[in-house]
Amino acid sequence: MKPQQFIVLALLTFLSRNVSGDYYTSIVSLFDLLELETKAITYLEAYMEKMEAISRQVNETLNELEQVSQEAEGDFYEHYSNPLNAYKIIRRFVIDWQNLNKTVLADQPALEYIANLTALVKRDGFKLPTDEDLLGASKGLARLQRTYQQETVDVAAGDLMEMNLSSNFTASECFWLGRNLYSAGELKYAAEWLIQARIRLAEEMQESYEPQEFIGQITDVQILEQLSITMFYLGKSKLALLFNEELLAQDPNNVHGLRNRPIYSNKALEERYAISNEDESKKYLRRTELDVLFDKTCNGELQQTPREKRRLRCRYVHNNVPFRFIAPFKKEELNLDPSISYYHESIFEKEIEQILNATEDYVERSMVGDLENSTYSDVRTSQNAWLDFKEHPFLNNIAQRLKDATGLSLESGEHLQVANYGIGGHYGAHYDFSEMLETDEYGGQGNRIATALFYINEVELGGATAFPYLRLTAPPIRGSMIVWYNLHKSLELDYRTKHGGCPVLMGSKWICNEWFHATGQEFLRPCDKKKDGHKSIQWKDLYRNEELSIAQLK
Ligand SMILES: *[C@@H]1O[C@H](CO)[C@@H](O)[C@H](O)[C@H]1NC(C)=O
Ligand SMILES: *[C@@H]1O[C@H](CO)[C@@H](O)[C@H](O)[C@H]1NC(C)=O
Ligand SMILES: *[C@@H]1O[C@H](CO)[C@@H](O)[C@H](O)[C@H]1NC(C)=O
Ligand SMILES: *[C@@H]1O[C@H](CO)[C@@H](O)[C@H](O)[C@H]1NC(C)=O
Ligand SMILES: *[C@@H]1O[C@H](CO)[C@@H](O)[C@H](O)[C@H]1NC(C)=O
Ligand SMILES: *[C@@H]1O[C@H](CO)[C@@H](O)[C@H](O)[C@H]1NC(C)=O
Ligand SMILES: *[C@@H]1O[C@H](CO)[C@@H](O)[C@H](O)[C@H]1NC(C)=O
Image (cartoon, rainbow, N blue to C red):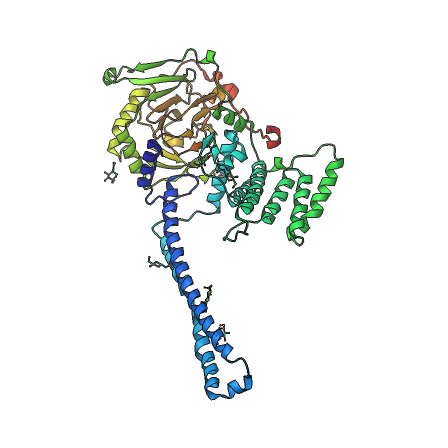
């Protein structure tokens, strides 16, 4: 393990107490799960020992019984005419078989095991992962594959971005991933994972020679059932039919196979004569052109040209703050109009520790939209917490630094938001401002004029902030902050600032956000008399209602 990895792990372990929430959105809760599994294994071992003891007793009793019943062989009538033998067999039924019954039917070990497990899970606020968590984790993986264009066969072998992660997938793991992706409408990836499951199952069978009997082992029949229906909805009826025939060859009475056969073959026949066959998957997966643009920005396919970058500078700035003459900010410009910049080394280790410590108890699944009507959303998969500057005195220095760097007032600013992104965690492209600002929205403090975002941990891979319209990414650098204006000087909305968090490929991502509001900034960032909103108006409503199918994406 690399030293940084160790530090992050140690930090996360330290933070993992009492965090409840959705597993797939955060790596933090996974540590609780690992701990729980370790304990559950010891209980299962205890259960097995007890069952083995019973099995031994039963076996010995069996040996005993066999012996005595052998004695009765020979002249049956003579044997039982002997009153002693008559007594023996009656006693055996009344006593021995009763006792054996009690032992065999005793569910004491099972009850104890269940009680142990129940106690383990019932600890304060602990929540076992659900189907939803598995679905979320599956979608996260598909998102990584799509955004960073990773082949299923490579990911299944533990190869993500040419890193050898030595986490080879088993047939079962591939199968359940495929099944979940099918439920999520990610049909293309579902089919690929199911095919991987078949390949791996064949290999696993070859390796072990004996049929594998562990609980939860999947079968080729199960895979074929899922694979044929996935192919069908992908619009590949001929393949669906083919896999269905394979299924029926292995399991001639398979209910699904028999029921689906005429449907598949009719569709396949229809398609043979149809001029164009519509891809069924269009109905299932909605990918917008913006999603595609966003992915391309994240994976580096879209970048600014050297010409566009030519005028960007790295420099020390003091913004006329006396203290900053001595300790200037390290500013790196990423874009001039709209202004987007890094401020490197703008948060200290101690502060990061304190922030993480303060959020420990109330990380919540991140919600998108207004708090009145917030629903958990796929757009954003992270967990977050809010820190009030007034409640946490250690935030004073950070607040001062935010003011010095931006020259803005924090009077109308929001609480500091801390967010953690886990497996494939991302935040789809969005604006920080409210497009239809109500007078009482944001507590009447005006729209979100600027955003400051601190990266507070090392993300091993992925997790950049991407601005698709500007073809720009700002990769996470621990301790650095990016600052940008969401509004033009005229306070009109700057539609070029659409941005999002690229999926986290490895590790987890921690960030802090501060949103500055327009109120109180009149003298600090004077409004331009000139309206300058026209500069970004062409990006308004761009891609708003477009939908693109996966077929078109290929
Ligand atoms: C249940 O837990 C107790 C205490 O940890 C342990 O001694 C016992 O072996 C466990 N039994 C089972 C069946 O898990
Ligand atoms: C049961 O006992 C017999 C005789 O001692 C032994 O050969 C056999 O292996 C035992 N079976 C099991 C399952 O322990
Ligand atoms: C053993 O248990 C079964 C099922 O409860 C019962 O039907 C049977 O009578 C019992 N046998 C004896 C000998 O107690
Ligand atoms: C990846 O790592 C595993 C285990 O560490 C090793 O067995 C395997 O050969 C490695 N593969 C490659 C391509 O480096
Ligand atoms: C992963 O597992 C597959 C099938 O079990 C095997 O063929 C392959 O060599 C393994 N790869 C690595 C890197 O361990
Ligand atoms: C974390 O918080 C606890 C209680 O709020 C405090 O006692 C402890 O010193 C803090 N640790 C750090 C590293 O700030
Ligand atoms: C909440 O959001 C849903 C989905 O966007 C919308 O249909 C519903 O009308 C909203 N409810 C309120 C009270 O705003």
